[in-house]
Length: 110
Image 1 (tube, rainbow, N blue to C red):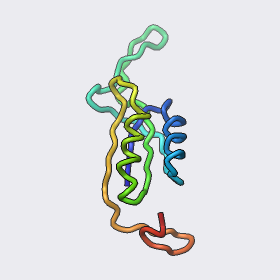
Image 2 (tube, one colour):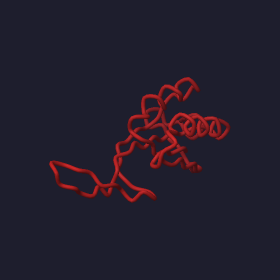
Image 3 (cartoon, helix red, strand yellow):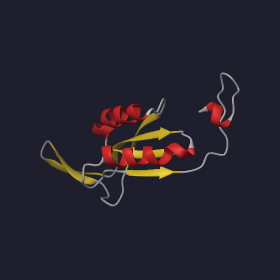
């Protein structure tokens, strides 16, 4: 399982790049969070206020182990802006996968 936290404006570019790799499915969720930058300050109608949680996109991809490195490399290259807050990529093992419609398990369920 690959889970990536990216900047929202990078989503279309990431989706297109992953489609070119043959990734057939992904889950995308709007999330908010912060990392080292600890949020930022914004100005609204002359008043300054602190934004603690920054909007991000979480992309999750279940894939076979042999495809993980290519997907991670593509995510890393395409989602990078070179500025703080580009995000993180997490890779972890899945214990079990079940396709609800057919009852298929593990590799067949991906």
